[in-house]
Length: 287
Length: 287
Image (cartoon, rainbow over all chains, first blue to last red; front, side):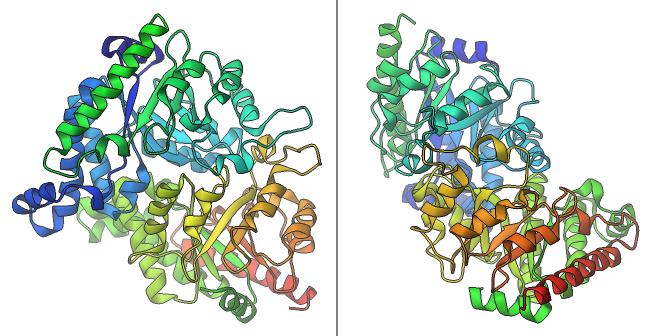
């Protein structure tokens, strides 16, 4: 999906919500697990539960969001069943919701020939994502192999939402440039606002002002609203640009909002609440 | 495997070689592919070829190395067949070569609850590695979830072997401390030389002197000898400590040394050549 199509989706849906699909089998409602167990034989149960949970969450939230972000750690942890579930969920999205943007949240990045293999994994084949999160520590040749795909995006880590973001990302050189600013500045020589976004945590508040000085036009993927304590209003006040330029992610606050039979319905309500707040923010910004 | 056991293996084998298992199906000898094809039905062919290639390389090189490093990118790129092959190769090593150290080279790292899931993937279950490579960009809470496992190791990226290592890792703060030095220094508050190693590229030459000032006792995982141009002698001159403290990796230079039927035999010879050079270096250091 290209930049214009993404902006179009945001305007049509009045939402820049990304729903994080961090499916933890221990948090899937028991009623759903039992339902799946009755229908499937033992072996397929884990796979079937993950896919069924994902599909129901997607069906309930799709009207209110423009993007989904499956977190690979949560699929890999269940071995081959988990990876098969990841592929099935991406294929389900591709078939049923072709206008939703899919971000594979995998934080990859390695030397050139290895990053090329990761690019193949996420950007080729049947279960293709639109974007992949990438860690910048290894520099240019670890990132560029992901940039050669038409309509695909790198989402580069800049200033993350966690406490550990303060350990290295705020390191300052003699000219006062911080590491995350160096990442924002230098990576613009590798890609542009049509194939690169940046991760900036919602917990970073007014730091969005500093970030917008360096990347006024780029999209920012913003995790940390909800469970991690970030404020949507603050993110919009300091981070929104004329095209919106934000994808705000919520995972746990939506997909585990209820652990009862009504989990999908409640997830839909939570997504709608965020969409309504986002609509307000878009209006405030004249979008 | 703990530190003492690893040092014991190095002394017994007169080797600190790690063989990188970056299995690229396009580089697997055609003769082996045909052999596998005759024995397996169509569907299992990719999986069976990867596992058979891996097993033969392992059998041929095991006497000359102390560690194996499967590179996850190369397995993930082949989807579920590839991931099944990764698991089978790790299980093959566990069963047949229990004294070899297994490093899952996956460069993971994310916020705490996500790193926990990655730790579960690589350090629990049937296909357990001894160590996992981790990217430091997201700081403390992205690394510590991997450190709670008895006998398991984090191999943290410090100064990598690729050209892009110069983009951010050499950034200097006002006191002259570089990013990779900050990573080496700060991470010692999270782990110690019994559960943490560092990646330092063989291409970094005399930088090993600076690194040893900060981490005199830690093991260093050193990629970049061979195809990437690093020198074993230089690495040993500046990087070896009283316990050896090095695991030097070679991937392409060993496993693709021949593309004919004799591929395993030649891989064994290449590994033996490196072992013999390592034996010399150990003697020079009085080990």
